[in-house]
Length: 201
Image 1: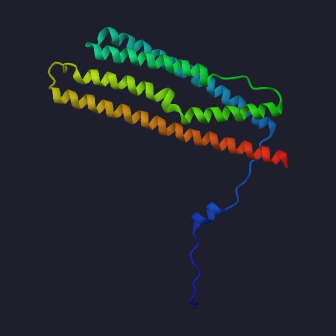
Image 2 (image 1 turned 60 degrees about the vertical axis):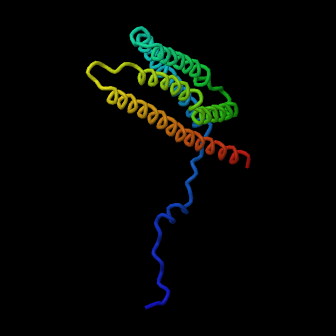
Image 3 (image 1 turned 180 degrees about the horizontal axis):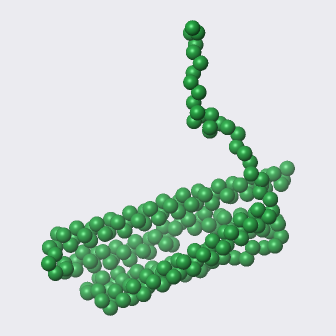
């Protein structure tokens, strides 16, 4: 028996060290990806606009129904946040026409991917923060409001606190998901950079 046994093969190390298969992107593939990105933007714009409009209608009714000035102010801020969100969608997310030339299309698609990546990384500024501020005012108004009939104050505060925690948790998850999406957009940018290097050689 040998004094130096062969060490066991580490499958994880083998997997990480294997050469990557390079997928070559042709001009038609870039054009198809660019058009797909713009179609996705149009779909997001329509869906998110309808969602924001529904939110505006609901909180518009809440202003008339909810008691107390703080709750009404929170509902009004939620409407302002929804309007601001729709404005940001039309300014930042709206689709653009893909140019015809191969070089122009490649440059256009790179800029759009960079913009999409930066939007996902900064989503907390233009999408999450306004709703967090408005929601905080709503929950503060709910906290100081008179509890529902037949419910003690501590149970009411427990429900309000739980709702506020769920709201914050959902916004954190949205932020983390967008950071993940930003990494995916960066991967596509790296692919385009590799295509540029191949074209230059």
